[in-house]
Image 1 (cartoon, rainbow over the protein chains, first blue to last red):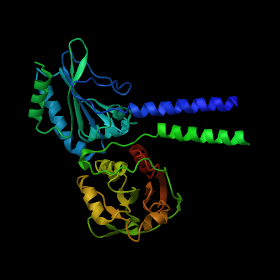
Image 2: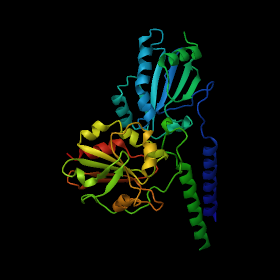
Image 3: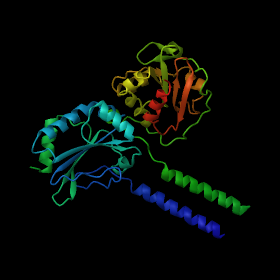
Image 4: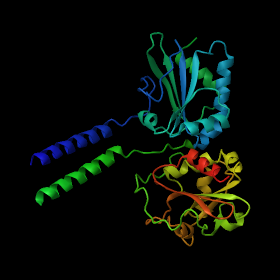
Amino acid sequence: MIKIKYGTSIMLMLMILLGSSVSTAASLPAAGSVLPDLSPGFSLPKPKDGVVIIEIFSMYCPYCQREAPNVNKLYDKIQANQNLKGKVRLVGIGVGNSSYEVDVFRKRYSISFPLYSDGDFVIHKKLGEPRTPYFIAVKINPDGSHRIFYSKLGELGDVDAFLAEMVRLSGIK
Amino acid sequence: MKKRASSRFLISCCAIILTLAIATSAWAISDAYKENIYNPGTLQPTDSKLEVKVGQLAPDFTLTAVTGGKITLSQYRGKKNVVLSFVPAAWTPVCSDQWPGYNIVRDMFDAHNAVLLGITVDNIPTLFSWTNQMGKLWFPVLSDFYPHGKAAQQYGILRTDGVSERAIFIIDKKGIIRYIDVHDINQRPSLEVLITELEKLK
């Protein structure tokens, strides 16, 4: 009798756990909000009064493959601009990609900016399971706090126009 | 007796709840497919009885390629190692994000003197429109549509609902099966494991 009561309690706890996991399913990052805690897989860089652009990609995604040279071009333009270099950081998170697969993607497209592996889709879930490629841009405030100011599915388009939009929307000098 | 039945019922319920809580999607959809991917949900990991084993001669088959013409497995005998990648169905989540990855590692297959053959039980028109979203594939994609799933059946990987398992077979130049991975249908096989197995052919 006691055993069954104990078992019933476990079952109830599991049902509550299941219920809470369903009700807290993440939504896509929204402009104006803050980035969820993505540790331990990824910690947001904190360039002072700067910007972090995050590409959610997969080496298995045809559009991410097609977009890779364009994203490299974006990185090169940031590095070549003395006002933006160091202040605007670009990172990629390979969702469902092991470290090995992220490395394959890095080598294939000669990517110089940091790439992170999210092999078990943990980060992908926290970000609302976006399709790929997906770009999120975050403004880092002088006090270390941050807010998302750009969150969009699909390719960058024209790199100069995209970079200009990043500067305009974030308000960085 | 009643108590035992209650306990069994309780254990079963807990198992189901835990499975639901733990069962998570293991895929990310590329925007290449827009809203056109059909999600069948989480499926039974495998649902067939393997008919081949490592060390035996690979059953031969002839299938039609999406690009036209027919390909016979034994045409590679004495010339190339062969990787067979069976995926369950076009326009589904995990399958759509498997072959495009292989498409950027041709050099890894070339380095091991291996060809890749992608196979599903879908018909040619379906495979044509689906693989067009992946960009230009360097490897042949073959239709095992009619007689339905005949090649999959020869290998013992045709599921009871008529699609194939997500399975990889590595066949050496002598036509001998050297590696079999009948994978959990809900998950993509590791590229690293595949390449490591190819390295063992040397």
